Amino acid sequence: MRKRPSKPLPRRKPRGSNLRPILSVIVPARNESRTIGGVVRNARAIMRRTEVIVVVNGSSDLTARVAQRAGARIVRYSEPVGHDVGRSIGARHARGRVLLFVDADFVLPVSTLRSYVRAVLRGQDIVLNSYSGFADAKRMHSTSEAKRLINRIIGRGDLMGSSMTAVPHAMSKRAAYIIGLSELSVPPKAQAKAIINGLSVTRAPLVEVSRLNRRRFGRIGTASVERLILGDHAEAIHYLTEVKGHRAGLTDLWRNRSLLDFYPKTDNLPPVEGLDPRLSVIIVAQNEEETIHDVLMTAKALVPEEIIVVVNGSTDRTADIVNGHGVKQVHFSEPLGHDVGRAVGALHAVGEVLLFLDGDIVFEPEELWPFVASCRTGADIALNNVNSFFQTVRMVDYVSMAKQFVNRVVCTPHLGFASMTAVPHALRREAIERIGYRHLAVPPLAHAIAAVNGLNMQLVPGVDVFRTNRKRKVNSKDSNLVEKLILGDHVEAIQWLYQHFGPRVFFPDVLRRRDLC
Image (cartoon, rainbow, N blue to C red):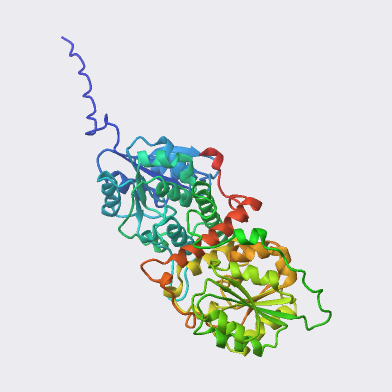
């Protein structure tokens, strides 16, 4: 009898292969054939029910083949999709309830990746890398500052520079849908949406991606990527202003802006011909009886056409001391709020150069004269060059980060930390006319308007205002209202820029295929 051939034994299916994956690891990849195999194998080892989705785009090597052999599911695009778009595409194909995002150009230990996933499984919505960006003893990278700044604006300064811009990071699929899968292509905006929508965001163990991430930008260049990331943060702030108002919910403290809407502008004298235009010194003072005399003596040493002191909300002897000096006083019984007095003083001034001081900081005449001289010899605005005083990264506070961020956004990065927020500074009257008197009440807004209008802003050798400016109660560590005010001023400046130049201002998104998200 002929022996009947036996049926081949069925292949044993891997345990759990019929079950829906719990974890989806998403890996955008372009020409990463050298590392992608290890990345996929380590990702698959995190837990049993894991799928790895590799979004291969614009590759000319064997990335797709190597990834597939290692056990990944491939989503392929013949052309590059751009930074972070692969994350959005991968999330759209993911079946797991936990999403883990990694890069294809370096292999991370399984134990490290597992810690991110466990945090989400234990209830966190988003888990970020504790990496806070590149910084050395003397400087911080522009993108690191932007990450820290936006976290502070949102009210999550505890996150420091942790950001969805960096990998690895993980989130629940539910969180991804709340944020919007397409928004994952702009990580800072996605993070802002997550926090605004009440999702829990925490930090996981540190992965030093700056050391692991190989330079691969090629002809795109690191400068273009830097501009892309700065534009992402500008777009994120734009989102915050849409949701929480033109100051992103940050305080305006006690500013009486309505006064300026109806404040009559005095008839100023015609400009003086020649090289010696008249000087007006404008001093804003509230309860400054301890310093106002010395401030006025310094101002008189400059021999100005006039000295205008805007006394507002004072309950001490400030007004009496000013009267004793025989200078022009503009008096308000109620506080005007920060910087409104500058606009009021400018409206009263007759000079062609206006020098702005505060009533609580005493300078020497030789420290102030260069500001006047700068405006008399070609500058529209003379700013205090404080950059040399920042000796270490520790000195760069959030207000300083905001100043530098706005200078980068308006394409004046050479100004660094210099800003119209700080005194002393001087302006020509023609500059104020172009900026608008009312805008002097919000110095970063005036600064941004000046920059985009091409006004000549020059740096004057620095005067150290950090040691001389006396500390007020509102500047305490427990309730830094002034910090929130100034951050809000910078948000307002950026919001004005959005209205005129779009959500990304001068950083167009030319590296991404956002239409694929």
